[in-house]
Length: 402
Image 1 (cartoon, rainbow, N blue to C red):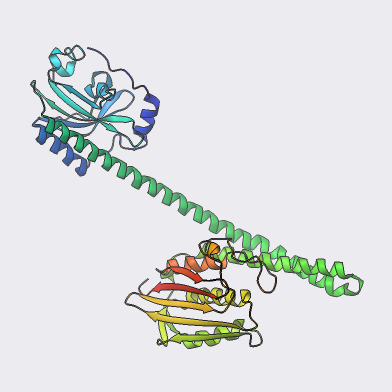
Image 2: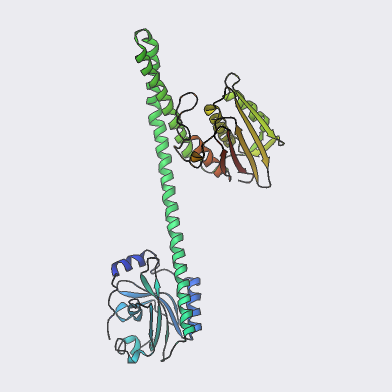
């Protein structure tokens, strides 16, 4: 009897095998049915899905035997994984110098005929075999061998699919953990940073008022810069905190939202000296949704239109329609438009289409990222349509049933 040699890439092969997390797992109906099919097609009493680890062969699936594993030194499959043509056929093991005195041949389970097709990982490394076994010498037809190869591929498709699902679940868990870490960080940042920032801004204001007569123009400019920088940092921290806390919208309650009242309220809230006109274009008077979230969406979009408008009067039109499953919105403005090269980026965190708004302030790229996140939580989508010089249209939807 000859002991099987180790594969030329044994350490890599073992790592690949372990990456499937399949060793010592329960039997699975999908794989067992394929093993049974191999036995029926080849008309053999025994068929196995045999995986080769460091010192044993372990049977993920078995037809015709009761044991779960055997020594690697005795395993026909440990020889098969070294075959260059990925197939090992032994028509009569009693006449083969490698196996004639193997205990599996001379004793139970009396392996006389053996045919094994190598199961290869997604890294093209052999994990084991799909094999069929008989207690008497025999041959397989080309059709039977072809069927074995097809079944072996289907087994690997199943194993690869399960491996992919497990990786996705691991990624999901890691992302959830990262999200929790982000929420914790945002809360700590809001608490630990806003208070000293407010103190700095307050001190700057007091300093400016108390010592105004003693400050030259450069000094006043520096104090003003401190105040504006503090305001910007507080807005940034608030934005990050808001972005991190959007979670399950079903924890909120829906209410009836009067669209005309929304227009009136927002015009009063963000308009300044009649520089803003918002008009409603809709046959709907009211919709049923989460008013607090719709307010966040619209105030971000309306405020952006106002901030970046290059006209003396900002004109915004809100179109609202519906279909069987969603409310459909368009926010259209008369601003400078958004260059096509920025349109795919503006909904990403910290990405902006313009360096400064009409007041000279630099955007932080949080508002539209927050809008996108809210809309997705509401079962909708958002996209922008725009040409430079012709304003922008933000099209978004929210589900009626989320």
